[in-house]
Image 1 (cartoon, one colour):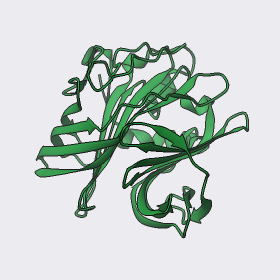
Image 2 (cartoon, rainbow, N blue to C red):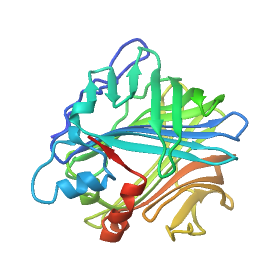
Image 3 (cartoon, rainbow, N blue to C red):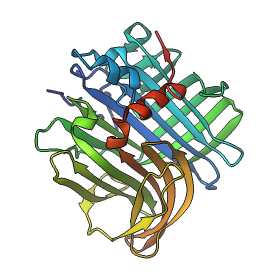
Length: 319
């Protein structure tokens, strides 16, 4: 069984990067941010047991597999003059971790007691270029709510800092901005495709906090539905789901829909793959016009052999 880390507070210490992740399991730490002027976007996902890795999935076919042999830092930059993406998987020999830091290859992430810091040095794929520099995530508050996502208790989610400020300073490409951001963690004892078939997750910045919508269909046919609002002190309350609005499929034909009190519209498709899409969607939540950072995921598509064969072009492996 996966053991949750000690939760960091504003005064102390552990982001839990050394938590136990069982064979075939996973843990990831996710941040996203949008610049104050709305022109720049960023996501960084740090994986122990890279859940969407074709190498990890292939290795698990006949035996339990150590997730430490399948680690990666995924960095995506969303820019008006072109996106950049990097996700190089590395094995145990290229990974070091403690309670407060995790190094994977030439990049690392660490908790300094008040902020999450990334030192990034990665090569993009499929067209090589470099993403190098620093990102700092400063939580407004640390939440005390973690959620079990299925009846077996083997998939969990902790929205660590739904309201954050993010500072980006990169050497390559030359880039400097700050904006509102988000920080959470997911973890599980078994592969994620064992627990779910599809899910849609989104978050939106509000004047006084953040709204999160987490909707998924479990593999047993039951559903997960969460509509949460966090204020800037970290206090949480649930709210009633707004109307569900169908949205245009992506070019890869991934389904999308969004909750909104008025019409919803796709502002920009940030990522489009055969099984996953990330989008910016204009909505109205809790009486405010806002923009969702929105994910759509089909784990049925992820399991398809043709999709698995495509993934190494964007997810190379070293060591």
